[in-house]
Length: 218
Image (tube, rainbow, N blue to C red):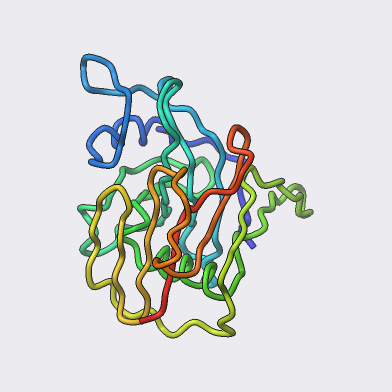
């Protein structure tokens, strides 16, 4: 379960992504002649969330693109304090009107996201239900991405251990002590059966399910 707050962010998520995306080698634009984007250039196509059982870290995967460009999948984590040793994965900081300063990271370098993704795929848990808390009542937020999982069957996932290596290309490969994960940054390709169990998704503008991530035990 993901409990959300009705809040404002300054800068917004799209502001942060507009500044960050052009520097990612897997980003396929287009961008203006200046080589930069603004928040108005970045369009949200949908998002889905995983749950951090400890309740400390927000885990959201956004699907974004430019008006004339492809959709990009961007896993993000939101933390109340900097993550030690993760400076290279920092997207930026933002002021949350309820929670205060939030450090926003590329999830591929955050062990909390890596653990949540492995659990979601290998156990078949999929995405977390999302709720707003309104006057003491929980109001369901309907998902904007439909998630399906194939090839699952694990009752429990072994302890992930350390994130040993991240190869950040068109498909980011994440090696851990127990699991190898693949995050597809530009969804749309055919499924790769050799990559393991698959997390797939569909959204407004993408009516058929396409691969979003894979996981396999070592």
